[in-house]
Image (tube, rainbow, N blue to C red; front, side, top):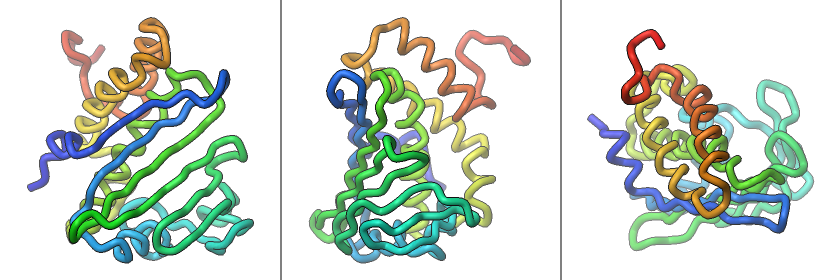
Length: 204
């Protein structure tokens, strides 16, 4: 059985400033799968639906991306099987993925840039940590029946709570301690509402 909290240790995390009004969260992880296999897992709609959500659209610059028929972004760059840049949720929210061979496996680098302050990393990074865990399970053959239900399961919420702690440390140079503390609370409400804070009595 996978230890999701332990698996978080395989990810390198970084928070980068983008000028005076932007921040980017970066994640890097190695997978024991070929570059072409990882590429298909993150771009093929049917495969995406097995660990994340079905995303449809044309994988070409200018192609529109849709989830459940609703437009959610556009392709800015696509160079199979190595590079993919898309907007996600709005033109100022850009997700950049790069794949490269790492021995017999693949190194995946993901960067999500938004025009917000550094503490916003706490509302971006943990979600991507969970998705990278889902991708790892899919690539290892450990598929789940319902990715959405898996994301809110107790084991994944516990992993998300741990990921929030990692991102609070990573964001240390990009925001004040007060901003980070406030964002940690918001992140826990969003990603790990079922995990009790240490010292908190059950029920609040």
